Image (cartoon, rainbow, N blue to C red; front, side, top):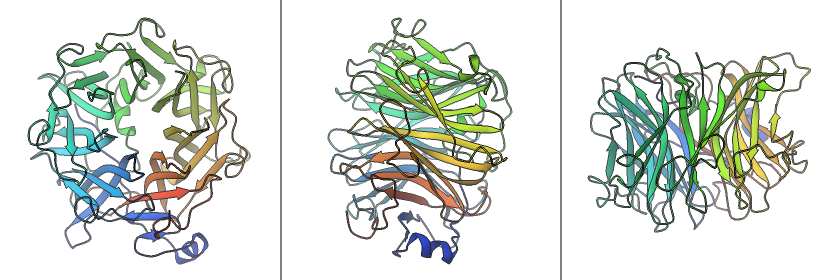
Length: 489
């Protein structure tokens, strides 16, 4: 089983006229955006792409993703960068705020990150052999960026789901007892029809045999399909989880409820990345499905089933659990073709849509005016809940098929209505002059919003081009914070 490994865009080529409008602070800071280059030397790293971010209790920001050198045969490595709350690289982390880690001869990419209570950083993703067999991959770093040798084998863990299966991890959550829950997908190499995959680990990185079957759980939503894999170097403008759309059932986000139950959200597709539905599963602490949730522990939601404007192609990329136990999910819906819209859904604790949220449990948001007869692909890849209960979703809005893309952010009132006090009518679009894509969002203690993204001037492949990590900060009203990276909080 193969898969698209990760997205990357080419080097940031921003016209000076745009920089003048947005502001510029130099030293990797461009109008509210902080840019991190991992290796600018000749023959060095040319592709670096953020896939996820988290915020530490002290306000520092940790971003993870992948780096790769020039050439389609080069291997990807885990990449981690840490920033001070003001956006400056943290000199106390790694080398100049950056760390890269290889999984020996495996092609690896980090997709998820979580911060332990002791400040250690857990990063998950996948590591693939040349044969394309892939494993859950995990590394734990100490607070200074060094690898924690007390974790797994030399700080690293790889998990095999079987001789005839490949596994891809996309999200991680840490329980109050220190156990680590990782979610993703597992795919038989013979059929390419995939299922949700969950694994739980003890705090030392060993598999928790008291969870599921030998520490692992596989969940089938009965929908599935087979699809050929694009070549490894044809990366194009795909996001961190579009890679997982090449198969049937994929868990893309995981969270732990206050009662210890585990919720995973993703998608279930029938064929060729069509007829997709939002899929969720809830597990008891022992890994068994929670039969009190949805239908036997599973929920499938398709917005097109009751509305002719929705084309029956819905995907989920992020979830969050409210203090009252309600579950928020963010993703996209194929709305009134040819438009993909942000899709935000809220569920009751029992898995039913919350009728008090938006339109009977869901809302969709487009960024391009309806009178503009153009293709729109707007997808929310990350969602966070503010301290006041408002909901912030970030992702990408494109005016062509994976082209002409900008960062898109929307903020909603707790009832699902767009927050008129944020941006323009609840929405913000950020264009730095090239292609921009947001994969993750964090909320700082003062309410400022930091989006983890990367940006460029067009498509990229591993054989050529360049991209860098990028963070963008907004104030509570949705305005670019031009002081970000310049030394101010």
